[in-house]
Image 1 (cartoon, one colour):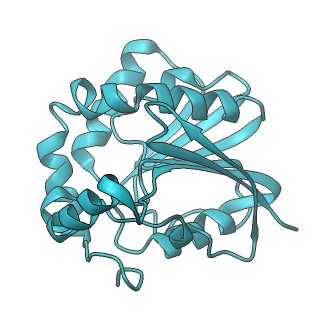
Image 2 (cartoon, helix red, strand yellow; image 1 turned 180 degrees about the horizontal axis):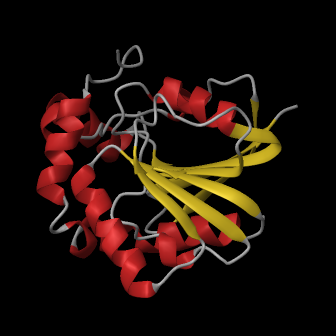
Length: 213
């Protein structure tokens, strides 16, 4: 079930949307989010150990992770994962340990498996964002970091009006234009330590959480 107050999206909506997007993703939305992805990976590279990227998509961020991180990527879309695997194969990225088809709402990893967990541009497309946040907290080690980069909606002004109007088409779009930041501030295992606007135009925000002991 979707988080209360959010437009409903189910997994079939997501798979269908990203089946359409997969062939053109890198040259369309991928170009728009490239700067934000570089900001997030630069922050992730400040740490070391095992990293989980939830919603790895076509693997746009994978080349930017440093050798100090062993990366596991998961995604619900087999079409997007196919392109991520092709990217890794062409580049020979030895620090990418696995790319797996998996539901971010039900991660198939043991508790405290990762030092860092990353989710970029994912929370607006999953049926239950709160459940994803709880899962990311569960699989991150105490003291580890959870990095969330996403579009968060605003209530006022022209942008707020557009987001509310587009919200009725969320299922068709495969993502939610209306998505308040409070939606992801749900886990008592995670402490929010910073909130940083990122390019382009501050449209995305990087939230950094610390996994509490």
